[in-house]
Length: 297
Image (cartoon, rainbow, N blue to C red):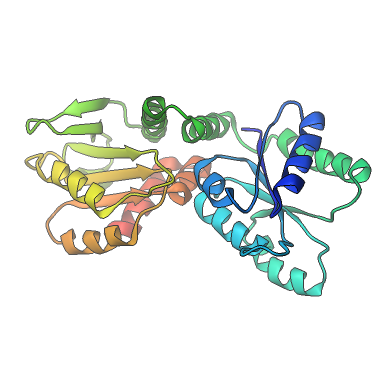
């Protein structure tokens, strides 16, 4: 499991102090912190296994519940340690997050001599649980490294390699990367659709795949139009295109998908939520089929 922790508090010096204190006792973990000024950027662009979120943000324009909503949306892999005094009003609001399985623990702020050992034990216990088979751990780590890579060129390549790994786990063998078609369009991945599975036979000989590792900008309508044209130009060799993104799908893309849906080309879009489901499902191919059914039907 990727041992990365993001500490999120409204005041920067509090976030930094907690991060530094935990770093001393969690030497095998990667720790970073965020405050009001850079919080949303880090929540969206970084991968983290655990987020420690202070729910009481006095004097700030945002609160801990808004932070948790954003984490659940962009990083469904993460577990949340919620920090508060947990009075009745807070417990009523947090119960929904507990039911979603997003909360690892509730923690009350104390003096560091007591609190840091408590958090350290809680975090170590979670990371030491062998809850994921080795394949899941490898894919999770691969996804984390690709999303956190700072070099733009490496970032794209690493995410493509991660997506190749997903398709191979589903049973697809022949996958080409960075392919130029007859119209000199570059296609990130072309997956030969040669599974002995009647479900996929209706989608042509190949599946075209677009990989976007730009979590801060989202996948736009123009991105969709360009990719849709690549699939449409395959002369029937492909009628299924798949978009994988570490970011989000802009609303205008959904409208464009509806407008283009009757033209015989089907485009899927898989964000972090769908990717998490693929990684953690006991049968990745069946989950992929269900995603296709939900979006194509």
